[in-house]
Length: 75
Image (cartoon, rainbow, N blue to C red; front, side, top):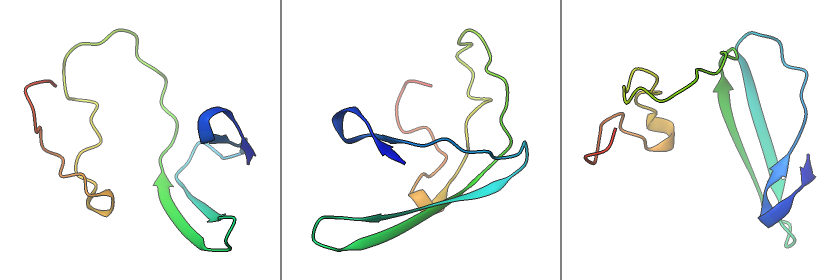
């Protein structure tokens, strides 16, 4: 990984078009470390335009405290 603007980081990968686990370990300047991992699905082609539908939502993701519910008036 390499540092970018405003504290964002980027990296290239050679992942296949299949599910894989992405794990990142970070160590701060004081030596404290943390690890986080997610399961990544196969890449899907981008769709053009916004339909207003929630058909493309990720649904509930309890590990990240996402309930999968609509909490406001906007879709």
